[in-house]
Amino acid sequence: MAGEERIFGVHAVRAALKYDPAHVVEAWLERERRDKRMARVRDELRRAGVTTHLVKRQELDALTGGGVHQGVVISYRGPAPRDQEDLEVVLEALDEDPFLLVLDQVQDPHNLGACLRTADAAGVHAVIAPRDRAVGLTPTVHKVASGATGSVPFFQVTNLARCLDALKQRGIWLVGAAGEAEQSLYDLDLGGPLAVVMGAEGEGLRRLTREACDFLAHIPMTGKVESLNVSVATGVLLYEAVRQRRAA
Image (cartoon, rainbow, N blue to C red; front, side, top):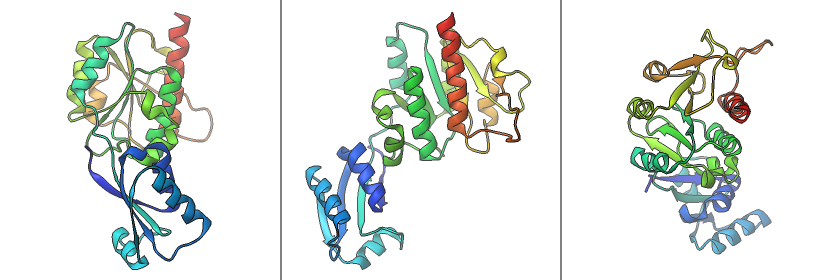
């Protein structure tokens, strides 16, 4: 299993209970709270079969380090991430050209959730990310992905550069997004076995990841904005690949 974390606040807790209740371990509620919002949370915890402790506000303050908990804290232990061996099994089972998304150290759960949702819509077979300095499948990711965490296989690998090399050995072309690249996205052939490689928020692709890519491409920007959010950019690249693959 993945590490255990504390999640607090009514909205975040309800998201965990809605999108991934099986991994909510236990909960602490402020004993004095009797309002309708807390009653809903208590009812959702009961339906999910979560062990609940009624405690004083001071105990919640201690559990959260003084965070804005709104009277509710849960312990959440996410599922163990699937690794490169699991990825190999998925790739072996495909009866069509692989279509993959690689996210290099994306740390914002909203961005990961949005990328998973777009990957599902575009028909991506798997999303790959490093295990270090990258967000995993948190309740926020489940919420933003709107069910895509269950439909798109998500893999976290120990060594991303080694994983990318293994993909290349399988004949999968790696296309990385880089704002300074000379080639435009629309000048590339995105058909066939393909992995779209996206960099982290603000930093872009790391050196080893960039060097592993067969091609680098930029998204043409004609306005005043210099770059796109990683989840928006992911959508642009994936759907250009979809367009080309359908036209082939």
